[in-house]
Image 1: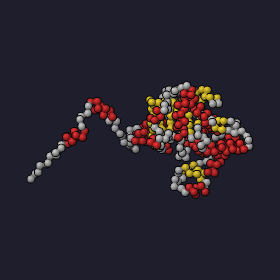
Image 2: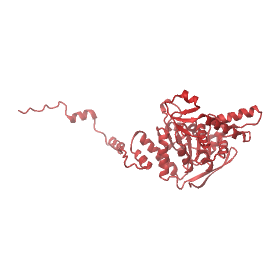
Image 3: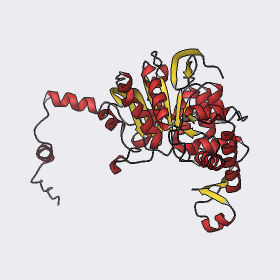
Image 4: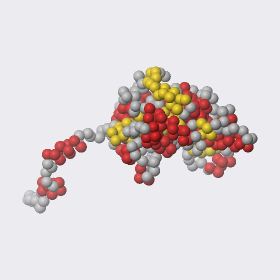
Length: 381
């Protein structure tokens, strides 16, 4: 005997009407259609056979993959802009210890950056390697008391030889002894130091080869600063002349580059002093009677979070309120650790050949005055 199915007291159609409410108006339907016009696409590992293919796939994914893809797009746009923006590269964090020396060096060699602003530690570790010393694979779980007895320094999971660090510090001090005793900007001092480096894989040497200015506004806060302090102490004790680093002159010089550029772009790796230094030079344009309008392009690769309120994690949206990034800027932030993210983004622009046809900038300095900023010859590697 068949039994009749009991009818639901609330039909499905009624349930949908109660849950969804009144039908959408045409205007809301159109807006909804627009917002739901681009579906997320799953990455196909079998077809992502190059960095370009992988990053292009990332653009249709979500979360930090999409943001990394957007960073690649912003970089592409700044490199293809016919106005020829001056690209400022800010470097912070354990990038050399992490294995990014070659990546940064190639950014210079292939002309995809024009000005470098770095922490002193990154430049020191580049010099350390240029003098024939190495970073070694270590462990974050090492017994640091034992490492201290062995004169090994640890940078998370990387080891360096403290004896070689001291030798490098002394090398810096001895080099400073050869210079005319006066004040120098970090750019001028580092340009002179580059002349002593022979290693063609060095960031500093490559910057010198292609005329790229390198600033380190917190140079004293590094082992280069230790070497310079050694020089200062010895020469003060002997009542001889000594050199000093003038960080205000750094401000003065970098801001001249900013105001003489028809358009500017910024690439921030991590954050710290370099990020703020690049941004403050935009604000300081008023000293020279110019409002640059902020960077036209900017992207950042970082692990710092915005909600702590610090500069390193502050968003590029926030930078608009200061006038550091243009309200119309193409921008992106990817919260991905740089040893993972930077090779992907740089690999993208190099593999796509976005450097081809690009012209280098020529900087003509007279002491602390930038006499000319000109477009030079086509990039060749």
